[in-house]
Length: 404
Image (cartoon, rainbow, N blue to C red; front, side):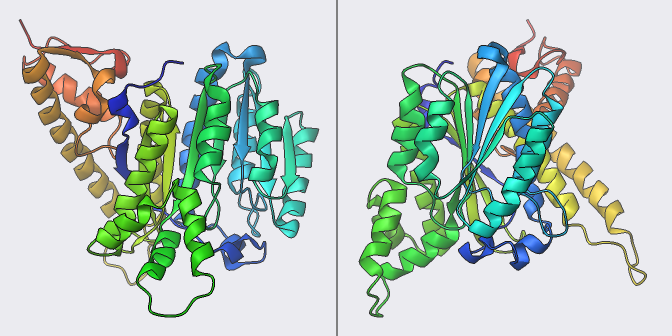
């Protein structure tokens, strides 16, 4: 697949909401795994919305229609109440497309108790004819095995650690670098932990004696690809600014190193709390960025819906009714903003292909709006005689031109 140009390699930024947990939460009995919290809907919805379109698209020309999926920090696979975690959701997706794509799944889990639960889930999937394997240990320990198995096939890697994950070099050189020469489609969605950045960055200004300080700083150096983040942290006015600058710097450095564009998604426990971590998506193809944008937008709707409180006898109105009204207001606001963006592009270029200008078309609503809103904006402009494009067809391929 063709690589993105240098401008797209700098990445696009998308703000959403979600949740995280500490490293102790990898224990199957921890509160995090007792039930699926509303905020976890975001992460899981992104996977559900994106992995199937990704596998369907890139698997079309892959040998035996085979696509490889790696989850480097899989957890137990299901919550204690039976609700599916990310491995169970992906296996459901693999089953849903098994008639026309082979989604071969590798799940890595370090914790022994979680691994036992995960192995049971994988065994059930194999009995159904799905290609899946559970591996115990650290993610980096099994990278060579999975990359070897994925040779010649598209790869999607989901790296969601509770804390610092794989190193910058492992990401850029082993995952992306080992597959670049053959042009094999490769995408990564990873958790870049804001809590870790705040905690470790605090060591730079702390007056307390901490014998682990050098090793801890070195660990974040390895995750970020150097100590550049330390200056960013110290130069920031506050923790939120530091987290934003370091996350943005990380995404740009990875993008430049591997020739990829990126999405950076803010994840929170609630909309009014500080960022817990970022989900950063890397793709070398503009179609991947468009597809991921659609998935992120739809996932955001699911997250907002999951955060709506259930109705109670003491309420004067039904929260669900207010939710629908708010969604309609968002829709109209997004279409209005996209119309402004489209008119600006028409004035600048006279004629352009929508898919070649994703960041400009979606400026101000990137990651919130999606193709249906772009189509609505184009149709509005067509009705007003401002473009000859009627908005019918594949949105990304539409040529929007000034009416002659």
